[in-house]
Length: 314
Image (cartoon, rainbow, N blue to C red; front, top):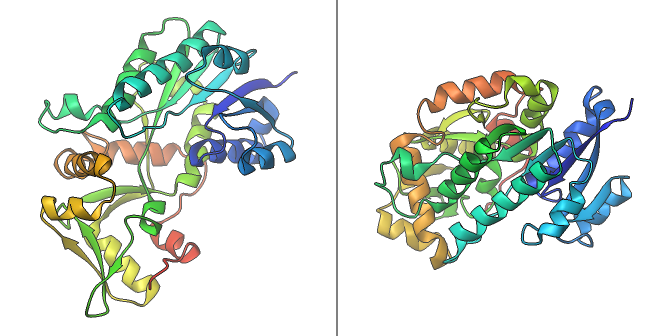
C-alpha cells in the first residue's frame, strides 16, 4: 500500500524539523507517511542536510501561491506554521500567508490540515491588552481554517520554549556575582515549558489518531508542565551551582532589557497575558495535562533539559 504524503512547512525550523524526525523514527508512522519538506531556501544547510538524509525538499513561499499549489500536489496531511515579522505589516502579512497555505491545501484536496496556532488574546482579554498581534494573527488564521468545509483540521499550541533561557531570557550577572532572571510579572507567574524539539511527540499523537483531534476539538496545548519563575530560578541554581534568582522589574524598566524597539510592546503583552489569563487561556493547566497525556513518549523536564543544554554563564 503506498504511503500517504505528509507536507511539512517550516521543515528547517524547530517545529517542522521535530515532526520530520519523529515520524521517521516512529515504527507505525514511518510506514504510513512519506515526507515532503518545504522551505523558502532549499540551499540552506538544514535543507541540504534533509536532502542528504533522503527527504524530498521543495521550495515553497507563502507569498507565492503557485509554489504552494506545487508543493501540495498529492498531499494527504499538511503541517502549517507561520512566522511573525515584527513590523507595521505583521498582522496583515501573517494572516494573508496562513490563509494562502490553507487555501492551497484545500484546493489540492488535502485530507487534514494541522496548524500551529495560539490563543486569541484580543478576544479573551476583551481588548484590554495592546500589542497582542503575535497571538491574534494565529488565532484568526485558526478561525479561518475552521470554516473550510471540505478538509479535516487539527490544531497545536506550543508552550513557552525552554530554549528561550539559553538566549535572550537567560540569567544576567549582577555586581555581587550572582545571577538574575529579569521579568515584568510576579515570581508566581507560571510558564508551560516545552522543549520545542519535542513538537513531534504531540503532532505524532494527531497523526496516530487524527479523528480524536480534528474538526471541533480544541488545540493540543503542548508543554511538559507549569513552572513558576521562582521554581525556574531554583532549578538553574541547582544545576549550575551558581545563585540565580528571579527579579521582577517595573514594566517600563524591563522593556528596556528586551532589545529591538519593534518587539518591546509585543514582549510585554505576552507576559502580561500569561500572568493575567494563563498562557493557553482558560483552564491552562487542564488543557496542558490533556495534551501531555496524549503525547507520544515521555516529555523532558526542565531540569533534565538544562543539564543537557548548559547555560553559558559568564
